[in-house]
Amino acid sequence: MDYLASFLARLGNPERLTRAQAQQVREDCLSDLKHRLIEQANLIQARFEKETQELQKKQQWYQENQTSMTQEVQDTYTEYCSEAMFRIQILEARLTRHKELAPRKYLALEDRLNKDPRLCEGLISLQPGGHQ
Image (cartoon, rainbow, N blue to C red; front, top):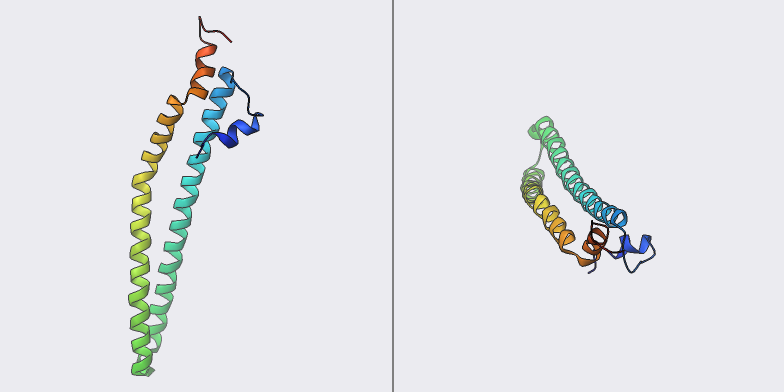
């Protein structure tokens, strides 16, 4: 997968980039990844919060109605709580893992961009002694 394809397409897929274009493509690519990582974290967080709120509502309902419940309803409630806690733990683990991996993903892309010859050529060609 060419991680620069969409950014280079915006420029008309030039054969060579100027220094300014190379810097802009690099910044846009990193900014796009950062935005996607933040969106992903926010989505996981929102799902976590929704599951937690639903569980709290169900627990509140149980507290208010437990004296008049049948054993079947109590069993259903217990099963729901168990499944909800499992989903919450999964989401919490996903969020923790995402927070651990996001900086690594960003640094890895930054490293790839620093080594990508399409961006390096643009940066080199306008340095003193370089040709354009």
